[in-house]
Amino acid sequence: GENVEQHPSTLSVQEGDSAVIKCTYSDSASNYFPWYKQELGKRPQLIIDIRSNVGEKKDQRIAVTLNKTAKHFSLHITETQPEDSAVYFCAASDNTDKLIFGTGTRLQVFP
Amino acid sequence: DGGITQSPKYLFRKEGQNVTLSCEQNLNHDAMYWYRQDPGQGLRLIYYSQIVNDFQKGDIAEGYSVSREKKESFPLTVTSAQKNPTAFYLCASSISSGDSYEQYFGPGTRLTVT
Image (cartoon, rainbow over all chains, first blue to last red; front, top):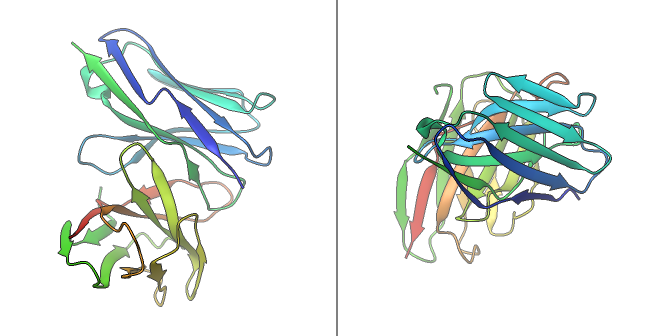
């Protein structure tokens, strides 16, 4: 079955700097890759997703890149702000309803 | 944040007792899921259901049971056979369409078993 690895487990950046979180997946059949953000004490929420027919997708300060050959995808946050502090989860899906999640990255943005 | 609810928010039980966690959604979603969240281990899938009266085991189904008698409801029972039941449990639902796989999460139930 699919296995998703996520790095780093914690990431600290200064406000205004960029943050990058990386994930790798094992199943070449996976073709949908979402990213969820979970603020402290709240539920996870989708922030951006990408499909395997696209190499990059942007939404304001966040972007996701996908390298199908290497089976890895990354979340990029530019101009980080304190409200970006949260746990971020990547996930992968093989065109079914089932998502396999990474273990999460705790991002801390210091003012 | 509305549309999918879980109750209660906190639940305390004695070891050896079964306990049922509630999950209800009014989003008309076909698929529903149960995840367990432990520190440093992300979201692990317990069970999922794509249609009424049908469900499949996830990666960590042992010691858990579910039912899907109604589209809106997907209760999870943590049985006494679950060796480490203390955790944060998240329910989710999705529309189950070829265009979108976004999962919408409930607020979660924190279960403590002593």
